[in-house]
Amino acid sequence: MQKSGQFILMNRSEFKNWLYNSKFTRRITLIQNHHTWLPCYKQFKGNNHFEMANGMRNSHLKRGFSDIAQNLTIYPDGKIMVCRPFNTAPAGIKGANSTGICIENIGDFDIGGDTMLPEHRESILFVNAILAIRFGLPINTNSIVYHHWYDLNTGQRRDGKGATKTCPGTAFFGGNTVAAASKYFIPLVAAKANEIKSGKVESVVSHNLGSRVLGIGDSGSDVIELKKRLIPLGYNLDKTVSKFDTYTKNSVEHLQGKNGLKVDGLVGKATLNLINVKLKELESKKEEIIKEVIKVASKYFKDVDANHYSAKHIDSLYEKGVTSGTSKDTYSPRSSVSREDVAVMIDRAIEYTIKEIEKKFI
Image 1 (cartoon, rainbow, N blue to C red):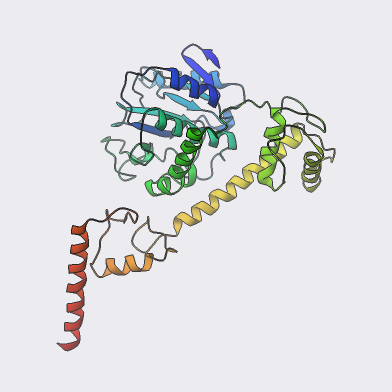
Image 2 (image 1 turned 120 degrees about the vertical axis):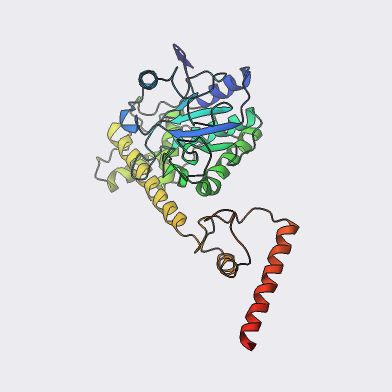
């Protein structure tokens, strides 16, 4: 844990302890998710957390804010900073601040912007999950919200309609819509909460990968972090073993040879940069796949997957006037239906059938 003025910088384990041991007098019902857009990954140098925080605070003061806007900032390396005191409402979302906690995630997560790093992703999920646990909030889109869902002028939640920002980004965990959050982000936060409750979650960002050249025989948390980064690239390594063994060396040499680097089995700056580039490329491919999946919606409703068996039936019933959506372009396919609603739909179906029969005989 490091402190500078009002700012407290922590890893996940330290933040969990701080959160559980702190007393809060303000009622919390919302967790706001934002991206900074600027500053973004380009401005993060790995050790300038406090410099960036002071820069944001000064910018907010110039804009007439009383302090830095956000309660929390999450950095690309997974570190978490308490910025504005939790007992002070943030200046994050007009109309949603009085009972909110504002999280600013460093980066530009619009499509074509920054590719989220694994540690950053882990901490974003962890912070949303641990806040929900600490304040007893249900993990859904009523408690965990995006700036994009609120009208900038009225402060009303309109789920992306009206005057809005793209914040937290059109590529943030699969998109910035309510449907995308429900499908991609919320289940991940719920799973992380279950891990935390069961004690299985790894909450410490303690590695110092990059501070030394790694080679055969080395051991430590930085070796474990190296293996974690190599595994998604297709290398079958045991991330629970902190030793740089022969399997790790062979994996590094294969990666080096495949990408035109000197094959020496050592992980220095060039090899580490290569690994990070390959991870970013992998994440970009995942985002592209997610974007394509999101685009595949039914004929009338954006939250109905066109590939789902029910899509054609929902569209057909809508065309016949038997059913309608919960809004102009959403159907809320997983919402419950009351007996009253069922009665209305049955009556409409009968009425439609009678009209079709009458057409044949009149």
